[in-house]
Image (cartoon, rainbow, N blue to C red):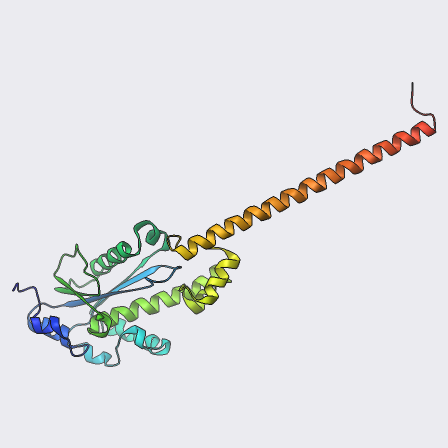
Length: 264
């Protein structure tokens, strides 16, 4: 088996957030970077990818670290500055909705992981990614199913990505009020669906997603109908004005005839 791969027992089973990374470090494959994304399933806002290197002596300082989906918002916010403090290196990448539309969400996700790893100030000896194989990396890597619950560096990357994206989505509600981005963070909740139906998509929505595309089409039809209504109202007003002017003109002619003021 190539030296760049961890022992088979580690690939088959990882008992806890520290086991996988510890095995890699023992085999001389560190520093170990974890990479994870947030926002893949959202229909609005960026895809956010983070890479993080904790180091073998830093993980105990983050004993409460876990998969970001298992942590509540308060705990993620508490861990966020601690991860940045104790990490050997970290890097967060924001991929805007227009790039997600252009590339497709999976390709954008993989590209984001490559950018996040490339942006680390410490060159990793090994990369653990959450769920997806990441081709094109300059160092050996391993996809880990459920990685944010199996490797501390992936869990740390997950928290960095989640908190960074959530904060951006809260700010986005100020730029595009009415959608509730500060509540649902761009995911397709009933409230978001209702706002989409009423307001139509904004520039932060992903038009490659079918619900956004349908909302855009509905909004286009509604705007076309509203434009037609405005045009009909304008035409009615114009015709009514013309009729009133004609009536006034005929009235003047009739008065002039009565008064004998029209020349022969």
